[in-house]
Length: 176
Image 1 (cartoon, rainbow, N blue to C red):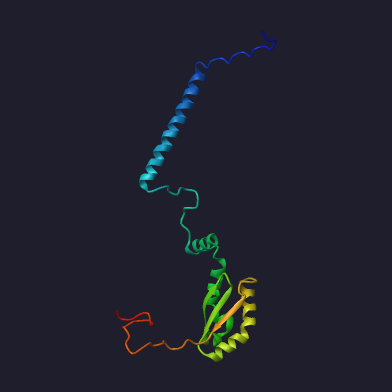
Image 2 (image 1 turned 45 degrees about the horizontal axis):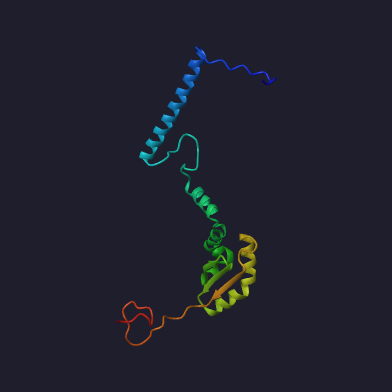
């Protein structure tokens, strides 16, 4: 036999101790049944509901919801440029804004495209482009706009041939 003394066995719970163990087990089983019933009830009602404490499912004011969406999707730069397009007259002045209008912003190339109503205004805006790029980058963050692409006035729609279908858009859009 070994020289190591054996540990005495733990005494079996009896009386009050046995009742406490049984009560604890019954409470855990009831809690598990209650959780399962609650989840089943929530599933029938259409999912989880928000409780007394704030969580990600609570309603938000519209501005906060939009800001959260912009941040989550990484749309900060396009949203900022869109804000500049809304403030275009303040950025370039009312006279230039009357004749030159921003059309689109290419986020990958960082190019702002501006359409002018005459070639004279297009030339004027091309001369002002470096100062305007500096002003936009100061407002939006350095490197947001690298180039301003200035477009002159568009010409009239081209008519191809004497016969045209109503509402057609060009040579590929014909009768037949």
